[in-house]
Image (cartoon, rainbow, N blue to C red; front, top):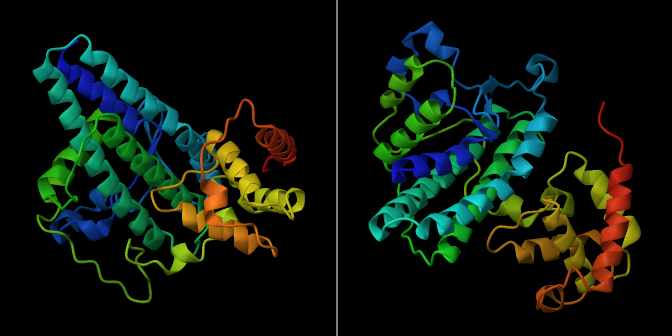
Length: 327
């Protein structure tokens, strides 16, 4: 297989089980003259594992066979697919020339950086597109997808010892990314591809009245995260109650085991710098002193031999499995 084809296969895994939308706010006004074009904007779309595109609605009844719970679960397992991408890159190193291998690695690395940047913009703008429902499953889907892509970027940097400067807005990079999104995935029709070139060539200045755009510099909501905010499940509040009812009067190491189990089940994903926020969420949930941050996070947990972990695993699995499916 040619290096270019290998790279395309890696990119396809990014777009499998992928949610996105093209917001009107990012496009030149000239693009909106055509009524048909307008119908393609400001709607969330989902690429399934076969890269077939379905437009989603907040109204579940309009989504046909693709419901939002299915979309969420599909995004949860994306972490494993992206980990497989790392394995594939290691494997091709054994069979390719150094220049071919570097072509794949460097281009994929740049592609992931752009996908994270675009993911941040998608998440921020989703909070505007659905302003009346802060717990929207669509907003949650964008958040989970961004978290997973961020983790994947860090794993790429760590696995291959790569360094990168802070990403700066680059119209061509964003445009190329979107062109690949539309051509790799079965998105709308081929004519929409040419319209992407109408994206503004400079960073769009977004100003909104009576709405707050979430940004990395806005720490207020992040600092006030509850434990349920970290739980990647539609019944996060119920799972938070399970944890509260079953693990009162415990110390930080117990809560570390809870995190390790939830992470293994793709029910929690922490970005860099969020360990302290999760520690605070546990502390705020319980009235007693859970111990120090260091006592919670020091060392590793042997999931095969640690009796505390195994006991917590059994309790959580049993109780979460009892939760009724949403009807």
